Image (cartoon, rainbow, N blue to C red):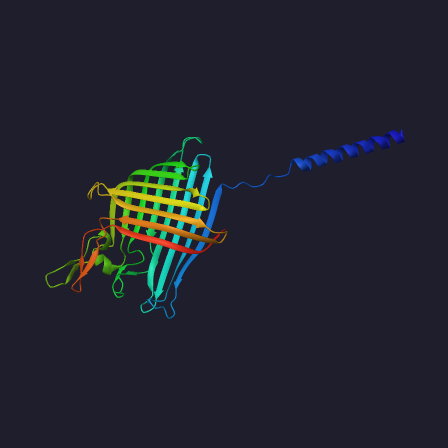
Length: 316
């Protein structure tokens, strides 16, 4: 009886230990799941020209652009929320002249979308865009009277519409039939001049101020944006963005155009070259010309900027 009892007790203990081990294994928690996709990129482009006893002449010059791109994208089943912050600031120093600004941009984009099922590429969307700059801008060589500045202007777009997204193609198209566009000009000197389309100040016949210029302008219209971003050749990434906007009340059909094209060429993990163009046409931005020492306002013109840089880039 004692031997049988001992055997029975051992069998129970061994069986219990096996069951206990199985319980520990089966209760191991899985790794946590995140629905956020994060991307951070910092870059520095530097261009330098130096001359020593150069027979054909030339001025020493150095220029640089600091840039950053940060994105936070959330995707879960039928919900999509894309957020992007773009920062750029560039300076140029040339022998015989003051330091001049070459690039200046702050842009925040946020788009929230919801689709009926996980198969569809169409989303019901709401879009928010904010754009301004870091520092004052000047019509060089005049560095006394600024022609732009922080929040002068600042553009805010807020609207609802529909968005078509094809991640496999790198294509995103957004159409909003109801978008509010707000233009801010917080620099009162520029606001009094009616810069960027705000109502300018009113003066009497003696030049006395009757009413200050307004610091904001609100429009409601149609907004169409498109982005095509994908690798077109080995180590070459193309990012093309187009924004079209027209106001319902003020000159409907007169379209504001903002088109950007950038090619990023990867040399290695940290060294990259980039080529870009930026074209803007806005009927509310009047060009100026200096005639016989007097600055005269002209009509709107196509604005074009070309970029070429080689520098360091760090992604984390």
